[in-house]
Length: 302
Image 1: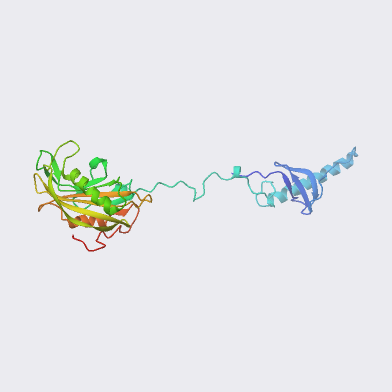
Image 2: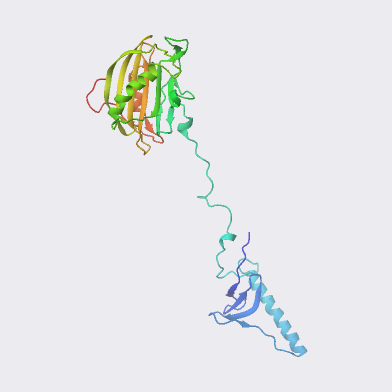
């Protein structure tokens, strides 16, 4: 698309020492010295004799021919002034965006579609999904969760249970430290995972007793947290292990997060070392590095 040259004084194509007025469409008869003097009008003397008129007309045609030839030979060739051409206004600039402004296709979220990780968007973390585990559409209490793919008939009902379950949720607590929060949460976690469910059923016959098998600090997703692990005895079945892992969220808000674990006891259940492996693999969303060692920072029972 060609751009219109705005009206103004430009070097006369035929006489470089003179500037001529361009009205935006064509050259006019107004000129001025190239040093910016006042414009002078080309005036034809009044009532010339016929012969004189013909001479002037012939001279004018000759000058016009020279001007046209010079202009056409200049870059552009369309008769518009080229020298000192003002920059085009924004309205006449090309409408296409610059490369940096071109719309970019949204990048797909690898973690959102990756079956190997469980994403907790609210708390800003991802958890590794072990081999042989799956991510249900909704977790317990609508919390992001995962469980072993294989199931079995629950010891105390006709329903089916999982030998390994993990869920992540925001923790509401009046306690002020991860240690106090974990010690407070573990009883609720045990009841949720091995006691009475939300429908009033007791798939394992309820919890009859428990004992603490681990209580220690752990680094999770770059934050120092605390874990408490219980071994629970249930009214029916082999019982199992429950763990509450509490740590500050890495998403900047620093609200407490709890990851609850439930592993059945018995030969077909997942090993307890898998709890530590999952803890070690918890990372902030978008991080490509390990989230935390998940190991004891001080001597403690495992």
